[in-house]
Length: 100
Image (cartoon, rainbow, N blue to C red):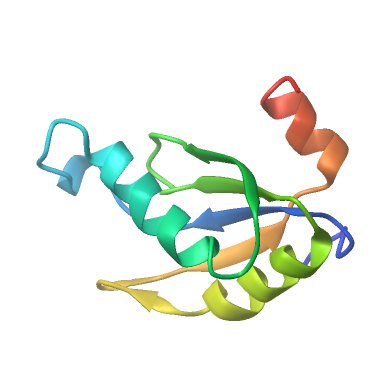
């Protein structure tokens, strides 16, 4: 699955295709849906919807346990007609991506 299974950060992929989204602020709707699901697993400290073809969403949890639960919940799950991929992102890489 991942190079760093001790991270509190994850990447969800294949969540959407920007070309198929019709509402003007679809990324906020995607973020709200994911925040709602992920907040059941633990406290979220950061969430980012990347408006790219891969349908990537990045989530940073307060602790590693919540990230593990998210991997277990999302990896391989179907969302609409898309199969979601989910992997850990090393915390230092995540922090560099979003300049914490």
